[in-house]
Image 1 (cartoon, rainbow, N blue to C red):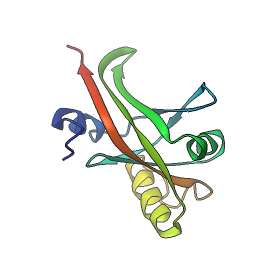
Image 2: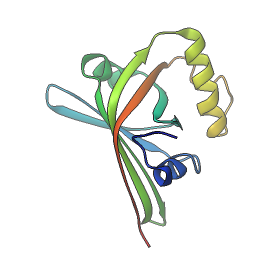
Image 3: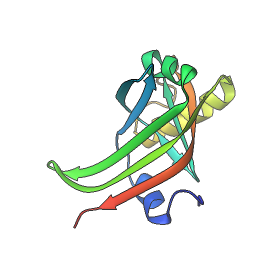
Image 4: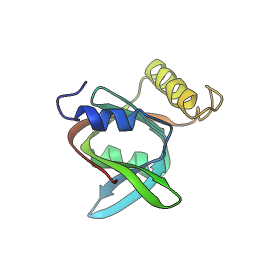
Amino acid sequence: MSDTVPDPAEALLTSEPLMAHFATSVGDRPHAAPVWYVYDGGVVELVTTGRKLRNVRENPRIALSVQKDEAGTPEWTVTLLGTATVVDDEEAFREANRRINRKYGVDEDAHSENTLVRIDVGTASYRTYD
């Protein structure tokens, strides 16, 4: 459990393999892209490359949103704001990459060209739709 992320939001974030939208920004130019992730106790891990990774290296302030919907009708949404850290540790990358790939049902060693990004959540908000 995290002091920052309410229990109901944690339950939503870990409920199933959904796509997250990872938002970064450099020079006041936002960039949002879909990513796979794992969440555990106030920390999000994802693996990425390219523009997202370059942006995090320049500006670690990020947003991550996850939404569950049914045929375009939202069921719930969670938005996290936090600080991202690029983790240049091969063993930490392999462990996180395997957890993420297992969650999404792909070969555990897929996406080996990526780099681990760890997000410490600063604030969280969530909403369920009835």
